Image (cartoon, rainbow, N blue to C red; front, side, top):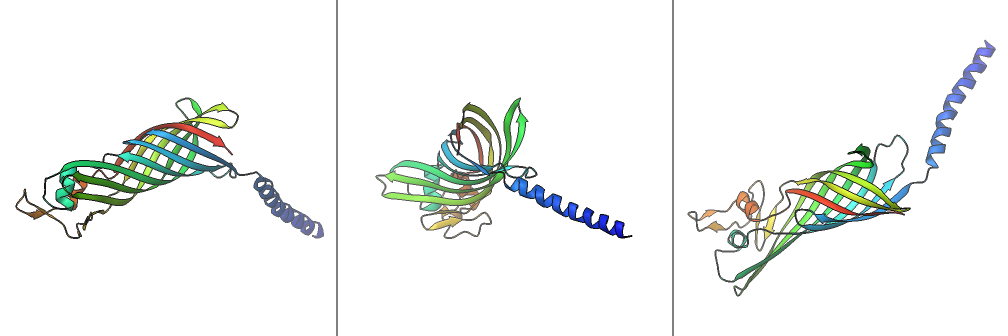
Length: 235
C-alpha cells in the first residue's frame, strides 16, 4: 500500500512537472517581427505599410499583421454628386479627386500555394475612411463627401527570399466593404434611408434622393480587388 502511494505521488508530480517544463521551454522562443511595404493596384493606385508578429507557440495557427493603406480613387460622378448633396446647379467646370485610408488586421495561415512553399492564406477585418472632393471651377462650389465603413478581406500572399533579411512579396485578393453613411455639405444618406436634409430630384418629379442614388453616384469602397508587390524586412 505504501509503495502504491509513493508511485502515485511520483506519477502526479511527473505529470504536473512536464507541462510546466514544456511551457517554459516554448515561452523562451523569441517573438519575431517583420515590417513591410507594398504598392500596386487597389481599384486605384495604392500603397500600404504593415507590421507582422510571428514565431508564436507551435500550436498558435497563424501570424498576426496590422496594416495601414492609402489609395487614390475616382470619387464618382461629379454632376450627380452636386445634385444629390448640394443643389441642381450645373454651372462651373467640375474637378474631382478621391482617396481611401484603410486599416486592416490580418490572420496569416502558412500554406504551400501554387508550388510556393512560403505562402499564406490571409483573412481579416477592414476599416475604411473615404473622402471624395468635388470642385466646380467658375461655379463657386467646393464640397467633400465622406464615409466610414467596416469590411472583410481575403488574400493570397507569396514570399520570396532575396537576401538574408529581405523578402519580395506578391499579394493579391479582394476586400469587401459594407454600406456606410455618405455625408457631404449639409446632407447625409444612410443605408436605412434615415437621411438628413435629402435633396429633391428635379428630373424625377422632385422626389427626394435616396441612399441608393447617393451610393450609385459616389464610389465609396465596395468591392476592392487588388494585386500588389513589395518587400518585407525582418527586424
